[in-house]
Amino acid sequence: MSTPSRQGVIHDLGYRGFQGRRLGTGAILRELFTVSLGHAFGVGRSGKSKVMPWLIAGLMLIPAVVLAGIIVQLGRMSLTDQAELFAPLSNYFGFPYWTQLLITVFVATQAPVLFARDLRYRTIVLYFARPVSRTMFVLTRLAALATAIFLVVAVPMTIWYGVAMTSELDRGVHTRNYLSALFGALLLALILAAIAGLVCTLTTRSGLAVAAVIIVLMVTSGIVTSALSITYQSEHPARGQIPASFNPFTAVAELVAGLFDQPTPNPTIPRPTGVGVPAAAAVCVVWVVAPTLLLIQRMRKAASL
Image (cartoon, rainbow, N blue to C red; front, side, top):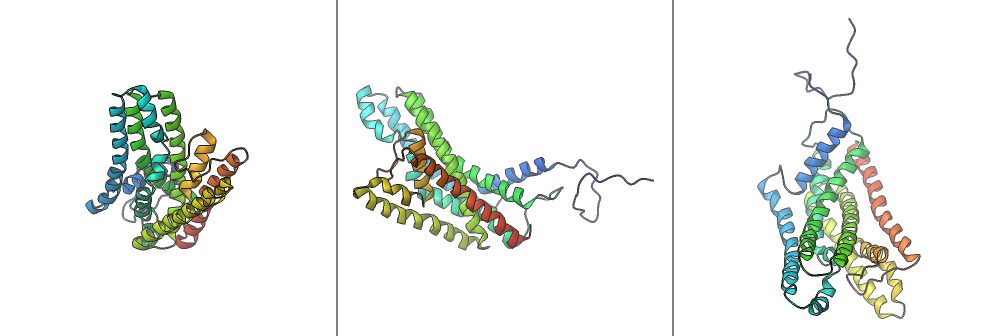
């Protein structure tokens, strides 16, 4: 009597054999992504865990709703008055830049949920039908965290953009700025997820991880802002591109401004031209790739995945 060939590995619970259909690696990763994304917003967790992510998401909506209200009011004014009053607000990427404190708090509080708890308790809530490689596990977790960050930023911007499309404002300008800002928001989400994930694996305690992520992002933001103010007042303000590269928010703002010919959200941030644009792109790539590779290595050492 021949023994049925095994099409893969499944962990045996020990008391009952599994005769159902075994899902493939793609289905497992999709489920891991879905559950991780839900956990980033408190879904499937305790009621207390839902407070912070939804509070931040609600606060992020306030500036967008205010801007949408301004658009509605401007729609009742002459086109000249609309141009004069709305021009400073037409830079969509200014939204994630000026709300970076809220975004930082969201990242700091939710990144430990997806990374620090794995290392501390060495268990996850899912039961895999097949082993998942360390790299795919980490990348899926990162994708879920980046998606959560992107949604927190993109949904308010989309509301703002949707209201603008129903007004008498220049739809071409708004569409161009909105799409470039979405690109910046996606890139920013990838960078923040990679950095926060790496920081969270350095400590297995959620409280310390939250504080560490806030310190890393906000301290660098404060230092870079001071350096940009100094270079802006100097005879060579373009040199500010170098210090701006050391913070995710200013680095992405530089790239969006240079790549899509957009105004910078802060006048102290220089808009790169010529070789400065690929240089800004290279900086952003390094911001994504370096922390991700270090995170994979850190997970291998700490969790033996």
